[in-house]
Image (cartoon, rainbow, N blue to C red):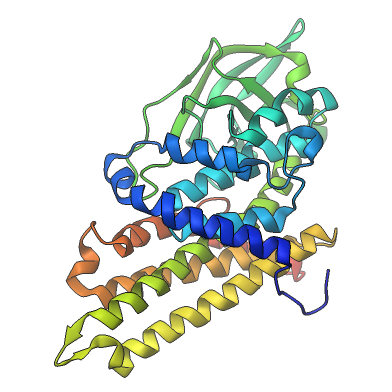
Length: 385
């Protein structure tokens, strides 16, 4: 990890600029319509797959681009400046769909799934959260028992991203597979190919934000999958996915930074155009200070996720830094969205303006992949409290 140097390499800057251009020219023009209709943006996702965005952090031998985790985060940040629904589709597809296969899968599982997931030909999902569980993922009630050479899964999952699209070909689920030492639940991870008898998805949730992102509840009723679909070591499913969430928090931080930057960009543009009392409102110190604070917070949040990402890629401990980045980025994304809406006044309350969408999209960042309260808990624990 380069000490005190967060300048992007030429390769990373080239990627960032490429995705920035794509986000401006392709993603942004469809964002309002997709948000209004709630339709999953298949044409955009197809182009992202062709660009190799879903394969950014994976080796070329599995169909990936041979990049790193920072490359993925940069892409997510730029997409979020245009449309958070598109950004979360990439974040979940890579971080929650493909990454568990890459981190914990057998060679056969990697060869089977990663080439399709890296090209965007297929999407994967991650079934951890349950209707009565929320942050208490250890309270898993979904079960999987061995019958012959198959797992039989029963239970349900809630709030699962990318789980019901026509591109979805697999869902990895955590399930209780027995009893561990001390009477604790033995939780394992199992790959469920889609479609599959006994597996069903609900209709899309009606959400406050992320309207074009596919989010559904899953149900398993005597769903049979081969025994070799166990992902990772039996009984390590919960621990393995906690480590996946640690990585994912950095990516969610990048998404929050992208949304926060979009709020700055929109506010600067509007402040230069909107006239009040004979001047554009950007000439007034009250507006200047609001926007200056928004940019300050965005810059600091970006440095926080850069730092966590650098630690991850260097093989250093990063759990606390990931929690800090996720907590701070999500907080300032909500702050910036609120301030941008205030700067726009009545127009900020109209859905035809992007800041209204950013306002609605921002709140989930304080909840998904670990609530703000959970992040504070992780930070405190790391400090020995």
